[in-house]
Length: 290
Image (cartoon, rainbow, N blue to C red; front, side):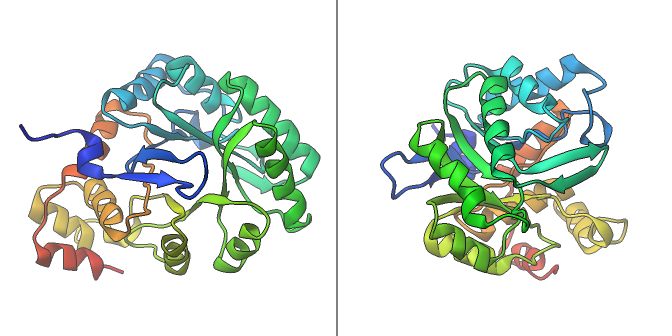
């Protein structure tokens, strides 16, 4: 009998494989930003629907859920606890280092005291003693990188963080960070139409670091009527979202896409991307889009 599980179709990746505490996840995760209100601000319009989406993720085989204290702020973490605690078999990743000033408004804040406070509050909101993957949401250039990562390193030593990740960094910053802490993951913007961090993907692949592409589904001209990706979707019968995610899964073995949605139907559509089958010519068309 053929195994049709998500893990089989999407594959698995082990974060921090060289450490004493490796963590293996299915390569197609869920980003929990969209369970909040408009502008990633405040509670969702339909609380029960948001909880239903989160619970459906695990039913579909998703075992990697990514969030941040700034989503809401705080709303996403609260909903994840309500829907998924005690997280049996589910890795929950969260982040700190972005301060919210309003809908769709964010600014970095890397004050070590603030990061320490954020960590303690995330532990409380998620109702855990240790966070599986804790990511610095942005590097704040007003503070030494060693001081920002030092907070995370101390917390890891104290058993409050399992693994440490970064977000929106270039290769030089990643290199500097790896001299301070063991980096398990990098989360940068990346998709089939936005490939500006290809060098970071290569660096992560070389070091066996997980690369988590945020905004994983292409937009803009590629997906508009008559656009190249829209045309390929019409030709293959798959959706633009499914083609975008399938391309990422094929792009690199360290790629861990985390598409987000507030809709169960869209969630199911995204997860089905792990089963996309294309001809070599069609894969080449995707490769050549950008």
